[in-house]
Length: 284
Image 1 (cartoon, one colour):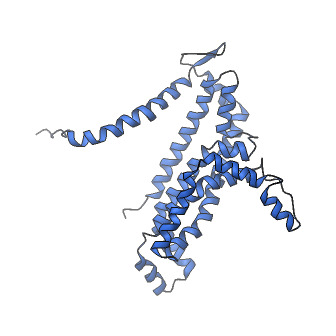
Image 2: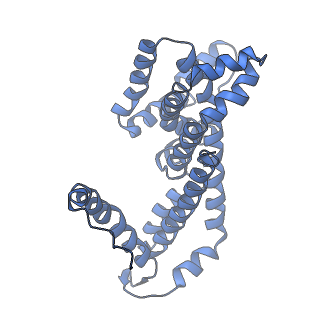
């Protein structure tokens, strides 16, 4: 007998259809157009539909493109490490050292920064980090400074932390607060100290949340334009800044599309690899 064909569930399809249509219209279609545009040509400041590899060859042969690529990758990686390390103690305290009510209020206050425009928050940091800003004024009273913090890697990192740290703390807290307390008690009963319990019980149990939080941090940092532009000085440029500069240079939208597609491919590779690592051996 031939195997029966799977039946089409009209009810399930009805509820899934809006999501499918939304993804096709606002993700798949723009992505497909951007990929197609990367093969177009620009002549006399006008795009011409074509299928040429000239834009890819041009961008990949330029040293400044690879400088921007590795710089962006390095800054996003550094931001991910710093954010994850700084978020862990806060998330640990919210998960194990405070009451449920306090934890809910803390998460609420961590969400509040997202009520304000990210650009406004960055300009607030611009004022704080300026050479005549509040931070340098405080340091000056102690007999130090002033220090240059704007237009540096430090400024960029501060912007990345302002963007990602609250989100990562929330994700880590939600992950660690769901750990079975019996596992921690059993670890202590077997003679494990606090640090060994954290390393061998809490981190493995919260692995998915920790990794997903780090992944979100990397994605947001890798694709951020505001922090490296306004706090980092945009020199040398990251890939997002390079996209803007490329579009201003002779209306080279196809070459900017090459940069954008390269970023998408990089993020997809890292995202799939990270998720695979997060759920590795989870079923065992």
